[in-house]
Amino acid sequence: MPAERQKIFAANWKMYKNGEEAEIFIRDMRRTAENCPHELIIFPPSVYLERSATAAKGSPIHIGAQNIHWQAEGAYTGEISAAMAADAGCTYCLCGHSERRHQYGESAEMVARKAHAAIHNGLIPVICLGETLIQRENGETLEVLYNDANASLSGIEADPRLVVAYEPVWAIGTGRTATPEDAQTACAFLRKVIGEKWGDCAQQIRILYGGSVNPDNILSLMECPDIDGALVGGASLYLEKFTKIIRCK
Ligand code: PEP
Image (cartoon, rainbow, N blue to C red):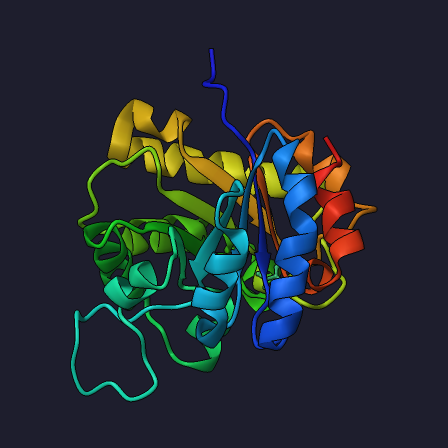
């Protein structure tokens, strides 16, 4: 019997919103959050982490960093450490979002180091992975997921709190969404791969789908047995759309 997993709905704001907009959004979202059976996370730009955490204080809304460095400190201009993110009020952090992997050359090895740093500092990593369009067209999707999941989780102990986000690169910010069947196949496969490393713990891991999620396509995705929520980019910038997504189920 598969474990009952609480769904997660997460907003990745990327490099959008100013501090005031972030604060107002979170304040306005609090009522929705109070009556929500799901876990909710907002990933604001790093300069607004603390302000966002203050706005979310006392509510069930979690705040997460979009990126962290794996080192505790050092001469890494522009970076923030996991401890700094935790100190700013984060409980989660994204590791290996495709925009980091593809625009900033983040390798799976770096992603694993970031996930280690996150766990070591009390943050829960949301490890993102997914195939490119070319890899998909070449029929390499499952092979890519297998290799990337193993490399990105390398050396990490089984931890039921860890979250994985399946985000096909071709679906992020493009308006093209994976079909529920394809997304389910990928997420079930990821769960199997995690199970090979972590045994039964894989049944407790939340696996999210991300890639052009919107209020119209969310329900069919959430009906898939191995999809435990969504990581939402563009649509999460609008409170009305994000609220509809959260309330889909
Ligand atoms: C994302 O940023 O992780 C994402 C899935 O973006 P979008 O929803 O805009 O495709």
